[in-house]
Length: 289
Image (cartoon, rainbow, N blue to C red; front, top):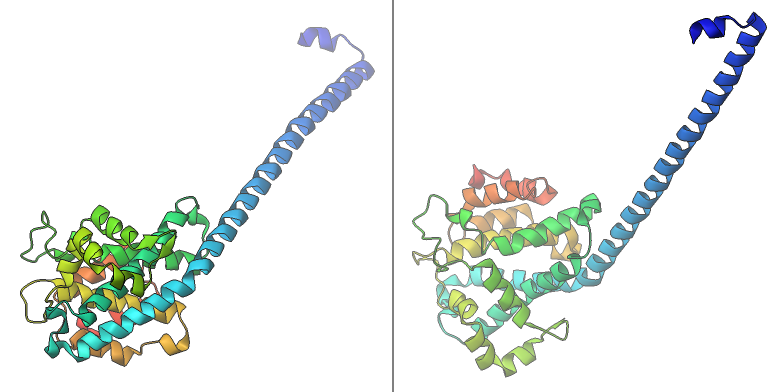
């Protein structure tokens, strides 16, 4: 083939080379153009998908954020009240204080459950930093009462839900407080207390007669939850919902320090919440050393 080509005159050889070069250039241009156009199209689709997911995520969080923050603020006040009046043992009898405490607790988690169910259809990996951190809080809250690594190193049998809840059971309890896609009101709860108490006995038993001096871990879990709730309110709530670092130190020490703080710290690190501004401040305190 080479000998055959060399048999042509130099002018003919140059013409053939020019023709082949033009043909090859055209083919490469066609292939390259197609690849570039395909990449541009794919990038456009990806950008549109990312934007759509971020928009839907923000819509869900915005719709539910204030209700969750208000429920969290109400629960925060009740937890503070319980600290200041722990010697009264108001949770030792199933009276108005006890039932309102249970309602505030479960309704807060019911709002979280609502958001979780809506987020199932959203790709949250595209969430912005602030929204992603919000989701991490939502993920961590239920774990504080269901993740048995919090009891590591303690004399606690994880096989029995004595001072914690099995995750599926906890979700069922929260969903029992949701009717027609709305968290039930306290008045409706009060009207049907006997029904709720019978069908969700585990949550009522959990709060029944919690004391600081008991050898159980219920108070310890409530304290870790309270700290997380404060960090959440400080990060996403109004300025009047903020708790100071000095007050956080008081909560940790009063009426006593939780035995689960070290394991709690590890849970926050695993859930990538240790980078939150307020959690960072909490963990710097000597109590977590």
